[in-house]
Length: 91
Image (cartoon, rainbow, N blue to C red; front, side, top):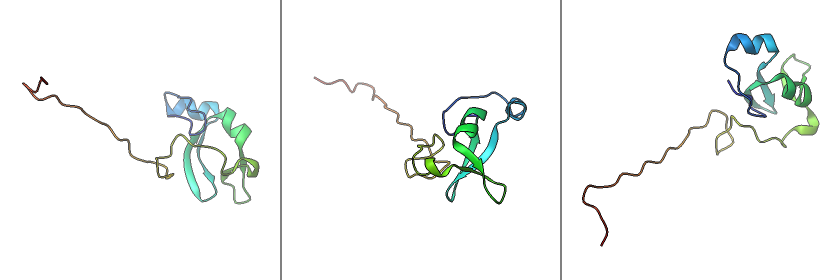
């Protein structure tokens, strides 16, 4: 798992629970996965309905690491592959 804010990794869900990671939080209407304890303490607050959300002073100002190019979480990765044809040498 990786913190959606700072990018720090943790190996297991058990460790994350023990250390106080937040499994998800919201920035406005957008849901993000995983916040480490340090980022949660600094950037998140509990909303009136009990959900974790980005503090007002940080809303719209954080570039989340779990976002794709279109700004949606869970974006797809693009991988490029170059293939050289046999005998395709340039003269």
